[in-house]
Amino acid sequence: MLPTNALIIPKERISSLRFPRQPLMLSDVERRGILHNMEEATRLGNVEHGKCRIVFQDDEGLKAVETTIWTFDPENIVLKYGMTIPVSRVVSVDIP
Image 1: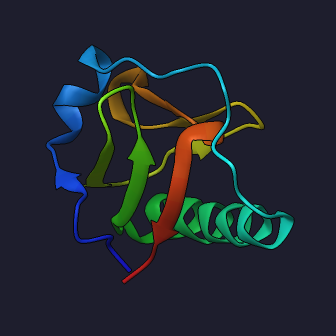
Image 2: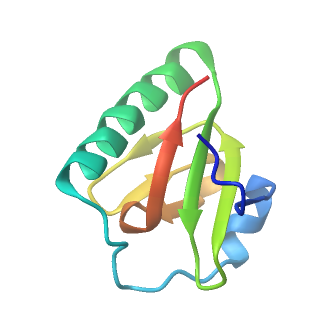
């Protein structure tokens, strides 16, 4: 579910954003849910070229992007053209 105050941006803007180093304060259950959805979204993106919505927080506030996840590791979600979003700054990954 998209928080009402998240600004939807094009994925091309991600490379110009600044992300604080400190992780968001999320519960273990929330983090496990995000990880599970990242796995599903990566599978969806690689097999069906399907998009997901990633809600994250940069140094200015909540943002959302609708894109395909190519891969991820414990530190970053990797999108097309090598753009990354720090996993520690992700609020949710929503699959349609």
